[in-house]
Amino acid sequence: MIIANISLDIFSIILSMVPTIYLMDGQYRSSESNKYFLGVCIANILMIIGDMADWMIRDTSWMFVRISLFFLTMLYYVASGLVLYFFARYLEVYLKLSGKVRRVYLTLIVFFCSIQIFFAVASPFTGWIFCVTDNGYQRGSLFLISQIIPFFCGILFLAMVILHCRKMSGREVIFFLLYFFTPVCASVVQTVLRGIAIVNLGVTFALILILVNIQFEHEIALRQQEKKLAEQRIDIMLSQIQPHFLYNTLGTIACLCRDDPQKAEKATEEFAKFLRGNMDSLKARGPIPFERELSHVMNYLYLEKQRFGDRLNVVYKVEATDFFIPPLSLQPLVENAVRHGILKKKEGGTITICTMESDEYAVVMIVDDGIGMEKAGGLPNLGEHGHIGIENVRDRLWIMVKGRMEVDSSDQGTRITLRIPWTGGQGCVF
Image 1 (cartoon, rainbow, N blue to C red):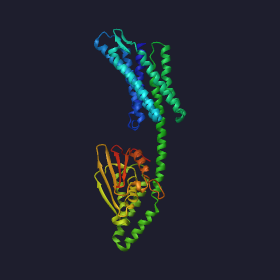
Image 2 (image 1 turned 45 degrees about the horizontal axis):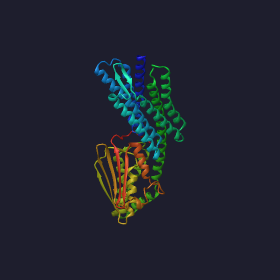
Image 3 (image 1 turned 60 degrees about the vertical axis):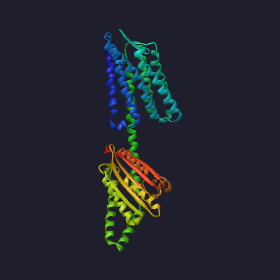
Image 4 (image 1 turned 90 degrees about the vertical axis):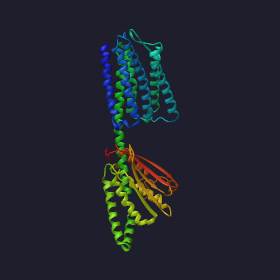
């Protein structure tokens, strides 16, 4: 039986490595719920290692061996508490618990898991949960505590799933119920067939079931992401159909033809570049080099400068360009700054575009000294003139390059900061 139980534990460790390796991939580890589930998997492996020591170490007459068994057994009980904690947090994030329910739930979980870990750490010195004698591992006088705590936690988990079952699909409910009842069934079988330890195997199979559910959720999320990007792509295309901008630019060029033919020629060239940049950006299905987006912005600002003259001043402080950005993400932010910030002031103002490097990010800032977003009517969204909304840019920035956007606005102006990880790369398309 000892060899059989050791073999079952080794098999359980190998099975536990499957979701562990899977979730250590960067694209899955970025999810908060997956981080907690990765913690469950790692804690489960440690728990099995601790359990396996009890089967492997039979002769404890040597002090070193006895001490080793003490700490490996302690590892088993500590890890069991960590399994409960990480799974509780996984469930909290998965079910999107909030408010009083979340506070009570987390308080109970922290309380139960802390007790489990406390008694586990204290037992090598007190013998409360277990002790190690010349005959090997022995249960302590308070051993029942280590069994009651997982039982209560399991009841709490089950209650949360039942209370929130309307938020989940039938498939999700079935997977969670299987997660709860698979270890219970294994425990019953182990009780009937004395000597065969299959509880760890039952828990590991339950982890595999949750992993299957995670994969389903990942595929669903990808489909939803693709749909959202497709909708945003339509928004982008609509935003570029702006007759008023085309008419105004052509009117400006017509005036320059009479007053300054050389400027008119230059403006015509910039207008052609702007239109070509629009078309190229609409064709792009992934992030583009920042220099390409910056060039498009410069064409746009040159044309606006010809129209508004001294009312619009532009400053460039570009220190970093070697990174990628979603197409038509910088240009809408600059356009919003010009139209909803600077040009709302009679005397006009200045827009500053600067980039810099940090260890983790390429930083892009669009700063204006306009009237601020509150006076301009809040965050500009896709409106009557088809401007791309800031939330559209924020979403595409995160989905395509894992970048983040911060908006800081007051009546003194607005600063928009983009932080783009150097690892953002060209991995995501739309």
